[in-house]
Amino acid sequence: MNALAYPPRLAGYTLAWVPGGAGHSPADATTYYIRGLPSSPSTSSGDIRLLVPRAGTIRNVSFEALVSGTAASTENATLDLYINSATVVALSTTVALNTVHNVYHFSGLSQAVAIGDYLELRLTTPTWATNPTTVFYMGQCFIELP
Image (cartoon, rainbow, N blue to C red):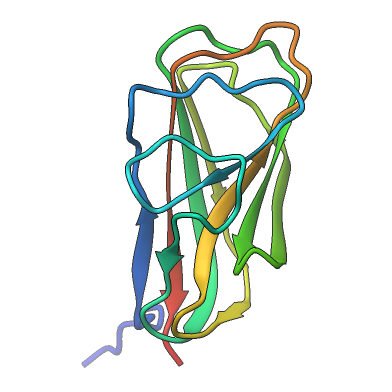
């Protein structure tokens, strides 16, 4: 019998940021915190938390900004994973909101988290020539168990 080579299975779980509200129209040069509840982003960190239920290691993050109104001009935003309003995990400095579906995947991460830590996505906007309107943000984070 031939042995089949399968990649190792990763035991873990996924946390998700879900879209909500009536859509968001981000301002120029502003930092927004995308939270775990279906609500618009906030300019304050830590007010609504996406809690980590079990310790592990963040391995990847996916992010989508769905622009259902006006698409932005081509200036780039910065996206970070923000843990406990203190730890910054840099994801990208080239996030664009200039199409309907702006999808990003960040793999190869190795960020430890503990029970009770909370996660936010932190989006820092550029000064756009044309600002996007009616934007919905969503994402997910895979946490590998020890």
